[in-house]
Amino acid sequence: MAETAKEAGVDYSILYLGRSKNSLAFVNELTEEHGDRFTLWVSQDQGGKRFDLKFYLQQEDLSDLRVYCCGPETLLTGVEEALADAPPGVLRLEHFAAHNTGNTKPNTSFDAVLARSNKVLRIPEDKSVLEVINEAGAGVLSTCNTGVCEHVK
Image 1 (cartoon, one colour):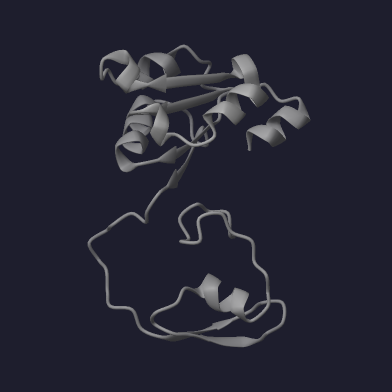
Image 2 (spheres, helix red, strand yellow):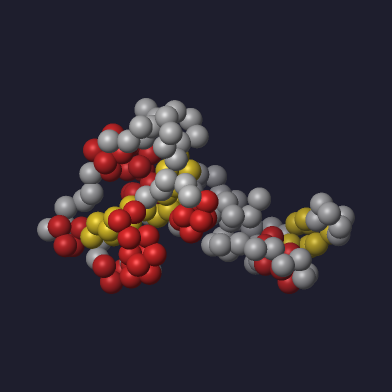
């Protein structure tokens, strides 16, 4: 996403938060590629202090801001709270795992119909729709392979 923004000449910044630097992926690459547009906050290096998201986001003009956030539930909840007064459409979240609504049911097999080809695929209880579609040769691109990143539409 940052690469696309950079290539399009869009004003952007990357805020990368984590507990320890060795747990964060691509730090060197992001630093090299995005320079002063890349901010790294490692709480271990800050005496365990968490980043003040609310203060950081209050410094921005929310009418023009778009926030794309991926991470654990605690981070996503913090960003949602920090942007509680933001206009609709400012925040886009990608979860590491599907949100547990408490309404889960046992998996069962079902049929899926591919819209373009009208082909019917049987989805067994132990596979995802994405797995079966790719096994059938459709070659659908995905990022997380779990259905929570919203890459697959």
